[in-house]
View (cartoon, rainbow, N blue to C red):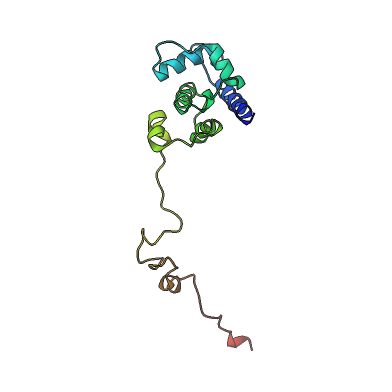
Length: 164
């Protein structure tokens, strides 16, 4: 029962994305038939995927098909090609609705090279990354670091003697 509901949620999202696409050959959205043909091309299939299969996928009537990671990656490539998705978050949403983990770095390169983001350093570095600056060997904040920061004052405020 839960799988059926999840398949329907996946299907509704897929339909929204497909209907948001722009077919280059027609002034309309991407039809189910054309979507199936493009999906078959992307997945390297000899024959097209019928519009009935796409309809059943969107209606949540397919058994475990919505969970097929390779199929979803193919769907993402078609949706990207026809402008239905542009963000990594949209791609990962469809994967997560299909009970899959988000795209890996290799998959991002395979689908859309622009989704690879520059890795930033963490806000709070660990002792392994910066051995003697912020943390000591046990992982506690280095007292020397705190005491020498200009915005860190451990002394009690001085009383102004001119006010008396």
